[in-house]
Length: 219
Image 1 (cartoon, rainbow, N blue to C red):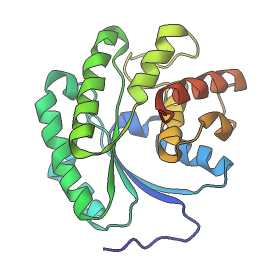
Image 2 (cartoon, helix red, strand yellow; image 1 turned 180 degrees about the vertical axis):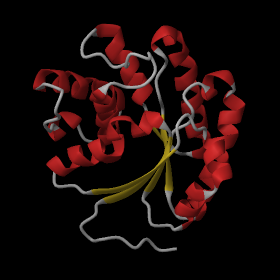
Image 3 (cartoon, rainbow, N blue to C red; image 1 turned 120 degrees about the horizontal axis):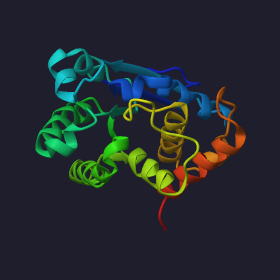
Image 4 (tube, rainbow, N blue to C red; image 1 turned 90 degrees about the vertical axis):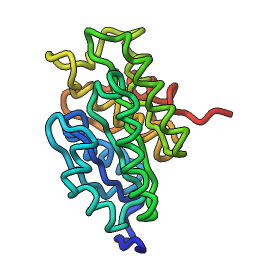
């Protein structure tokens, strides 16, 4: 089905995930950053608390939305620990969605999430799992977890994990948004800086620079 979009919309993106995507309204934050450069992102989020991709697949609403064929990208965010505990199950879930995404003439993006604060060593498994299935399906991997790892290795502030040691603070979501900007447009998110209540300019700049170190195109 051909995409039917407003001509002023540069990108149309469907996000499928859980609270890791919904917290701090990540899709809207990405769109707000893009607007600084005059780019418009039309976005929709299908989210359920703690949901895995398999749960979304079985619920069918995400599949129906993909079949509309009006999106440039479909972003898949898996339940945060599944790629660590059962990578094969994670791969199966992504393959199901990727087939539907390709059938709709759309492109799959994989939102690589981060390790829990009390299990930082598990980032290696997360990164490996997302990278492997991304390579297999020729999907775009958005390396948010890798950016978190880089920031946490050097900085105590701003804090990325919320009090539950799992979900993102506003700073954590802002770093995720910066990685999405760098991945979507191939441009340094430093140039996309926008005011965000609760984050000062120094913190934003630090996070923007970290994101670009991870997602900038390699020569």
